[in-house]
Amino acid sequence: MHSSLKSNPSSRLFLIPSKSTSTPYPIFTFPRKFSSYKSLRTSIDIQQEGVSKEEELILPSNVTRRLPIVIKSSGRVSRYFLKGDSLELVCVVDEDHDDTTSFGLDVGFLKLIRLSSSAAKDFFIPKQVSDSYISYVKWKFLHRVFSSALQVLATQAMFRAIGIGQSRSLASSAAFNWILKDGLGRLSRCIYTASLASAFDTNLKRVRFSTSVLFSLSIGVELMTPVFPHYFLLLASIANIAKQISLSCYLATGSAVHRSFAVADNLGEVSAKAQIQTVCFDNLGLLLAVLLNMLFQNNQRLQASLPFVLYPIFSAIDLLGIYQGLKHINLQTLTKNRLEIILERWIQSRQVPSPAEVSKEEGVDLLGSRASKRVWQIRIGWLDPKAQIPKLSMMAMQSLCNDDGYFITLELSSHGFRRTPRPGIVICLREGANSLDVITSLLQSCYIRKAFVTNRLKRKDASFSDLSLQDWSFLAGESKVAARDDFTEMYKQMQEQGWIVKNVLLSAEEQVRYIFDQHQSLTL
Image (spheres, rainbow, N blue to C red):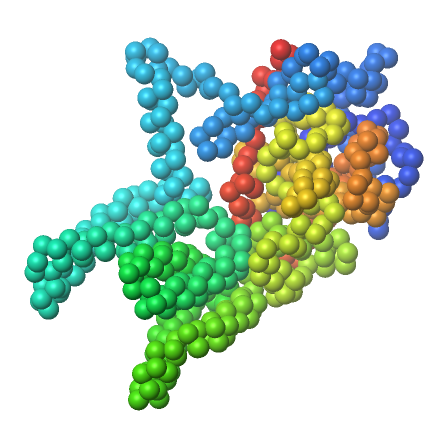
């Protein structure tokens, strides 16, 4: 199963080996002996006919070289170009698919249709589903459209039965109320779920708690309607939008939460019991509200002010219960953040933590401050040309070959309000990369970060110029060997601890892949 993870001399992970494997300082230290660095040597040599490879790969400022890396995102195809010592990401036109001129059709119109179709597909369809999912969605479309229409007709009939809507003005007002209140609420719910589809998997606890806060605020908006009766429709519409967004998050994350508790694959039973709990607990809440109203029914003034007095108290208790409950959800699925916690613990103690231990360390992390506090942040995605990219990383991109499943580079990007440049590590995954590639690349990046933190590059204002080509080559090779040597035992422990290692859930930004283009050796 893991044979594909053995070290392959022809597979280069941005390696540019030097003649000597020694470094001027111990930049990397492991608790055991590793394979010889010479086993990772490739056909690229630093010295070749008296000219260093570093000098050969750095271009004059007036020369542009096309790199073998193509990025496809949101219907756009972009390619990296190296111009002198700077990196550029340029949107290119796919000439292989530009056959519209032979039919005499408008290129811009067909391009608009193609982009619209791609956007609609990304809006409604997940990225990784079975082949039968499209057919299921077609029949679901038929079911939901006519079911919703029947509900509207039934509601109108009920209004007529009690005398509402007999006049044209009332009918028009009811229709206007439906469009603003319910229509805008459902539309906002649709837009929200589409924009945060992957976040329901990667940041489940954070999204669920934030939408719970939003739901609590919507209750406060509804309580303000008696104070501002002239703005009833506006306030009700705003509150309904917030409730619909919160409901969408609750429904989207419910199955993942139930699955985390179903240790015997009894997902149906856990979901059914959860519905029973919800109905019973909600009825107790209704009973509490009725009793409080009955208690103050003889004092209309106190009864009118009761919601404003109880709202902050009940909301605080509500959010406290949600926050504490989320801490007890031990998700077994792997995300980038959870995997990073696991790999750090593995490097420190050679032991894989359980889902409960990772959940305790992960917490809810409302503002995502855990990752931002690190000196060397690890990021999965595409390389941002706006960030400061060291020359050795640019040379690594030029030496990329067809056997590489990913490559790792360094960057110096700005974060926070002060926009202070901070060093970071970027993992770029190739199209078709699986969970093994994600785990291996992240483990290698954690080893690289450990080397930086424990040596002279620990300081926050570290300059990439402090890292020589020889040091980076040695660090890359040893970290790659360490990751591949550790993988089998670590993977076994992850399975024993109950982690679902089949897939690694990534956000939309982390799902961006590069495509290797063999026809890249062009200098413009």
